[in-house]
Length: 246
Image 1 (tube, rainbow, N blue to C red):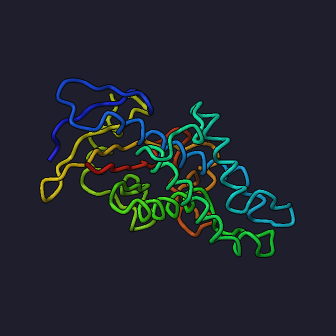
Image 2: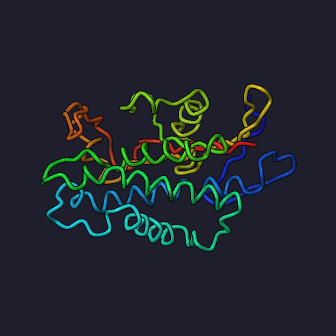
């Protein structure tokens, strides 16, 4: 049951009003979690060649080295330094859980990175996002959850299928011609047992590198073994979905 829907005009911009039931910091926390995941994906993309071919050199592709690149990207895109956020605060704790999840995922995949190349290793931004989201949600222990989903016809991993709330955000908002491109959708949502969670869905659009697997010609099998969707630059391609418990 939706209690109240508050649009957020830009990630990180809080629009609070009378009766708003979420914590004052919910939108800002969700914005940072999404930005950190996006930063990690950007680093994977920038290092794709070195991941697929260790002969190109893999300095900085261990867990701590990779995280340092992600934090630098996060600073660049948000203007915020994670080190300046109180680690004992709710925002600090959750952000550090996500950073720990990033290190965990990168360290766990070292054998993949170091396997002889050049060859496609399958460690792409989408895989990174799924693994980090799962590791973060496990670490957060119900306090927060993160997931990357997409319109049903674009979902390649069944575990990433949108739930009813996410599907509503996609079909009623993000796919609507009058929805401002890039604007997230958020709401306080009642859960079974009477507890409420702050939910936010952040639309993601295909960039140039995404079209390597999701572009055209439609139906052609891409490097990952899936048929390409025939997408165009700027099409809706996914959604970062975040829950914050109350």
